[in-house]
Amino acid sequence: RGTDSSFFLFSEDAAWPPEIDVVEYAGVTEGKTILQNLHFKTATGRDSRMHHPTPPGGGSFADTWHVYGMRWSPDAVEWYVDGVKTHESKTGVPDK
Image 1 (cartoon, helix red, strand yellow):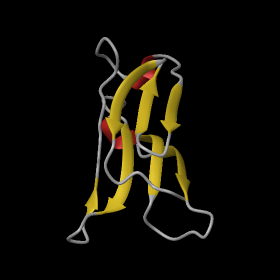
Image 2: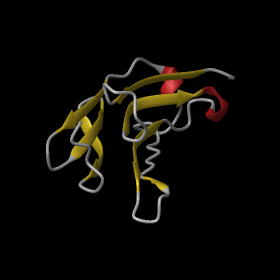
Image 3: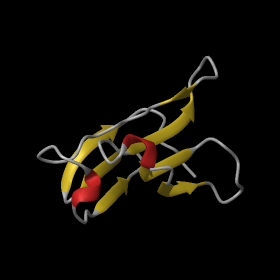
């Protein structure tokens, strides 16, 4: 509790957004959810695209080791937990 471990990508020029969070483990959720996000600005200027998968089979992500992944193509960003696709976004896909 109280940790915020993450693996994320942002552009080489450090401009924000975009940001792709492969996984963010917010300790305050006690392992009940992780964050897999694609941050981008909508037409109205708001940050968009949050996804919060729950652990496979219930329990906590802290109960065992997991493999987190992300596939980024020109048309989509896909997120994975233990080889299973948890989310996909075709909106706001960064080109840098």
